[in-house]
Each structure stands twice: as C-alpha cells, then as structure tokens.
Length: 249
Image (cartoon, rainbow, N blue to C red; front, side, top):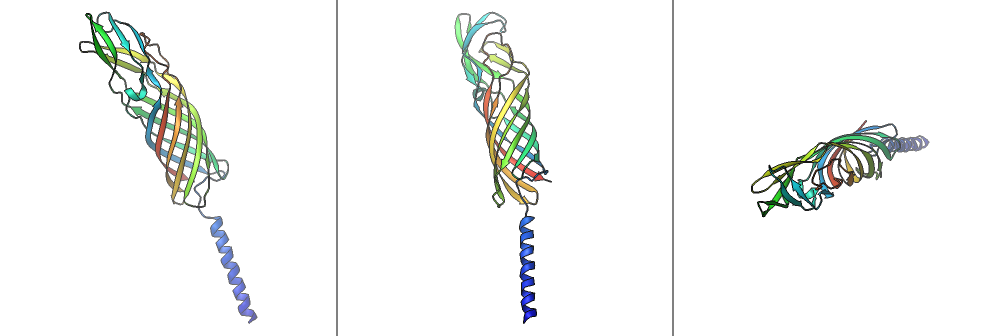
C-alpha cells in the first residue's frame, strides 16, 4: 500500500515538473533580452496631408515666349498616386517586452496630371495642367517597439521611430493647349522622418510570425527654389498600412 502511494506521489511530481517546464519553454512572439529579430514589411503609405504647390502667379519664359501663368494650391494627394513602400528592420531585445530596431525602406509614387492653373497666350487665358516627376524616397530609421505579451499567438505592439530620408529631384511639367514647359520644383533633398505605429503579430511557428501594422509619419520640408514661386514647403504627412513578417533568433 505504501509502495503504491509513493509511486502515485512520484508520478504526480514528475507530471507537474513536466508541465512547469513546458510552460517555461513555450515559444514567445514578444522579444527576449538579447534576442535578434528580422522584420520585412511592405504595403501602402497613403498621402494624408501636405501641399506640393501654393497659389501664386508669375511670368514664365519656359514656353518659348513670356507667358503670364497662375497656379492654385495642390496637395501631394492631388498629384501623386498612393506611394508603395517596402523594407526590412532588424531588432534587438532589451527586455522581455521591448526591442530597439533599425530599418531601411524605399517608397515610390507615380506622378499624375491635374489641372493646376491658367496661362494667358496671345490675350487668351487657357487652363494649364501640372504633372510632377515620380516620387522616389529612401528611408533610414531607428526606433523602439513595445510588445504586450498575451500568452496567445496574437501579440500587439506599439512603436516609435526617427530618422532621415533621401528624396530624388522633382521637376514639374506644365501643359497648355499650345505649349509645354518643365520647371525645377524640388532639389534632391535629405529630410527628417518621424513615425508612430501600432501593429499585431500572429505566431505561425517557433520564432516566426506574420502581422499587420498601421501608423502615421511626418516627412519634413523639401529644398528647392522654383522660379515662379509656386513651390510650397514640400513637407507631408502619410499613413502607412503594412503587411509584416517576423523571425526571431
């Protein structure tokens, strides 16, 4: 009888020990101290605000003669398709809920034509349209992610980042029924970028997860000296919506 009781106690202890061990070693999606992560991401960076041109008037010689022209205020969203963004970030766990990271990304948006103002040709005022060069931007950022461990495969997080971006030179082409002229709007510029985001990951295997992320980004002013004074500050707000992957090791 004593022998059977002892065997039962020993079996219970071994089962409890195994359960504790399994709980302790269960895979996590949130980072651990000293753990590295690689997070590729891709999606859209929706235009959320910022003027490309401002209301102004002047006289242009770019049409082969002196032509009085006017321009109305146009936002980036009026003159660009939604930018597409892709990149990768590398993180390092500094706590069991937080990591620092660095990221590299590239975004591209195609310019589109929009009626922008007027041109007066031989005493007749006609509408003019503006089409800018494509927007091409490389971003480098550093930041911090804070995860909220839920003991489930779903783990939400918030993040903040700061960095710099290089934006290619942007010309604008004005078109009237009779003439076309190209103006230098913004020089190739190095700007500051600031971002806040929130996301959620879903664990699909040990050390692997997929997820989604949304946020808000500020891109500071572009440099340049457009000769007719049509140029706005060139800063803009965007709202990225991204699909993400995540591998930890």
